[in-house]
Length: 195
Ligand code: HEC
Image 1 (cartoon, rainbow, N blue to C red):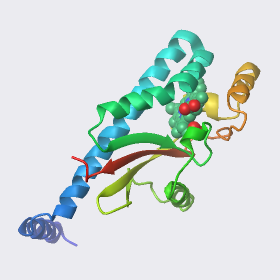
Image 2: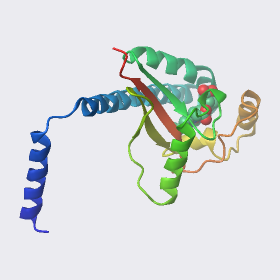
Image 3: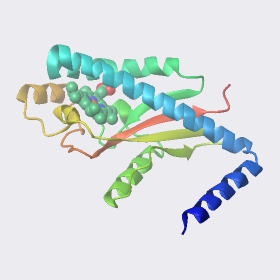
């Protein structure tokens, strides 16, 4: 296709989009995506920043203390900052904390992310599940991209750390990960019927 044809097509399709104003449903979806982006970013930034701080000041054991004692409370704090009807959490099909066990369709969504990865499909930045007339779940896939994650989720060499994790999480599943593995997802639940 020539460049000219492509530009004409783009212009045509955008004018078609402009011709029909977005429906209420479409507007609602745009708002869900905005809330999802904001909520997931806020959680990941807050947890990441604090973990880095404890790792720097006291090494991996202090960072473990942080994750174990404060990740949950910090998540609740982030939730207080989000608009009414919006909450955020982390899930994993190989969860360490039972609090992060997938609920309802969350397991199936994680499996579909895994399936996509196995087919070399580039993961989308997010997926939206419609859970009711005006309720949604926004899923952001979490892939291990930093070596530091493997300190506590990889094949742990540090015996003391290994022992400490096992004593805090006797049913731990969140070990043995490699770079680029799907670790889980951030889920933002958005209820648009709440104002
Ligand atoms: C210092 C150890 C440590 C490091 C480093 C670490 N984690 Fe974790 N991670 C934990 C602990 C402990 C939990 C359980 C937290 C809880 O009890 O809420 C956890 C939980 C999680 C969860 C929630 C699901 C679950 O298994 O309970 C995700 C997702 C996660 N980590 C991803 C990551 C990623 C991505 C990185 C790298 C950026 C990372 N972690 C680095 C210790 C660590």
